[in-house]
Image 1 (cartoon, rainbow, N blue to C red):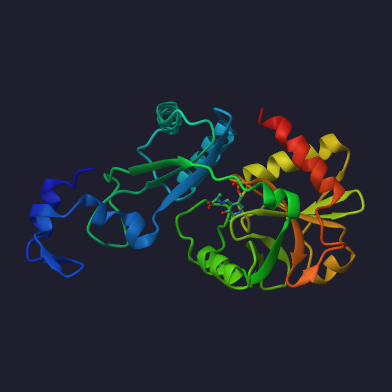
Image 2: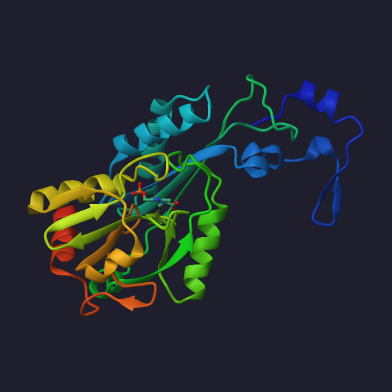
Length: 290
Ligand code: PDD
């Protein structure tokens, strides 16, 4: 990434930069300091994982990326090329089980809310070892609740994650694995970084897709797994008080696929152990990954 020299000359006139406690000549600043992702969260991201040397759901993630980019009007970057970069970096890593994070921001420029259409998007990717914790699937996890204070376009996988970050920190503080968002009307939307499912008898409930939740890739495959197992699927939001009658809870997220939930907001679910359909869903999901 290089800042347009003309912009630097024209607009950096009479500007002084300071990084930590050091004055730095503006011309010497790394363009990363001007990334609109940093100032405005002006960008989108994806998280993928691989299983045994194969990237899972690459097409789905690239399709969602294309939708996110279009929704915030970032142009000038080709998603097919990004797909190639993901594959290339993964092939270079030569590690069978990894987490792949990448983001695309609108570009680097002097801070100003509006943008210039000539801006070149910035791309950053990080591939790292995936730490698997079999205990999570074996024992299940506890979840807390947190008000869904996010914006009205949660279907966009944007870099603006402050509500998610605060929710997760609150969950961690309470000894929970994940926070489940409750909207202003008291309905469950989704987890701070996961899709959430409730099983009543042989019926799997989950929040319907809308602008209020992320179209989770794991959600899609969990619902496919549920259909394969012969469970009925109901896409309808519910309230926490309806969980008095729930048999099983589970969450879904790329890095961990299916995780049983055995405690909700301090209440133990049934016998406090992962439910039988959840275990079946974990097994069924595994078949998609081989
Ligand atoms: N988060 N909902 C939210 C708000 C999320 O941030 C995520 C994933 C999900 C699950 O989506 P998927 O199944 O496509 O991973 C649902 C990623 C993993 C993250 O932010 O790290």
